[in-house]
Image (tube, rainbow, N blue to C red; front, side, top):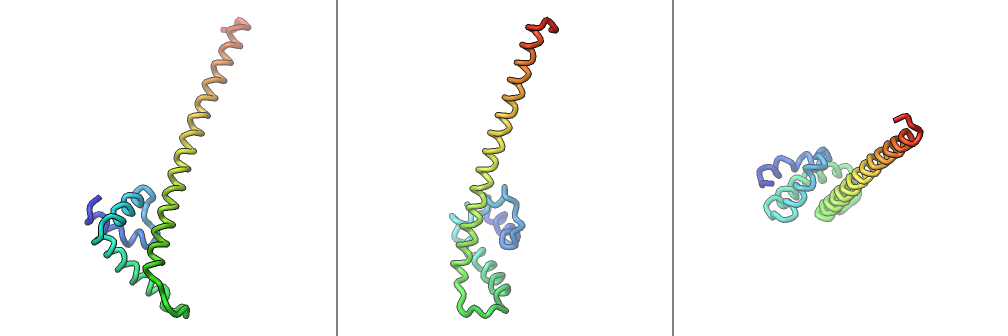
Length: 115
């Protein structure tokens, strides 16, 4: 993924509109590219500051909030991978079960002389 592609994904990421399949590449690039991380920090700081403008919480730790956001996104990606693997396993087991049932039915038909 190029820096130009990542820069186009910053706002969708901040607004939680980035697709799961794009998010993994985006985060891998941002975590290894200093200039893209800096760009993400700038956009996140502005967005976070505007959203927290009316709150009376006092001091803000925007950098920590950004890294918490990145950590939660990485956890989300892990969950998506686990669910994808689970879906593949269940599909495979279901298909194997259907094949076994079909073969057993053929055996019954063969033994009864229907087939």
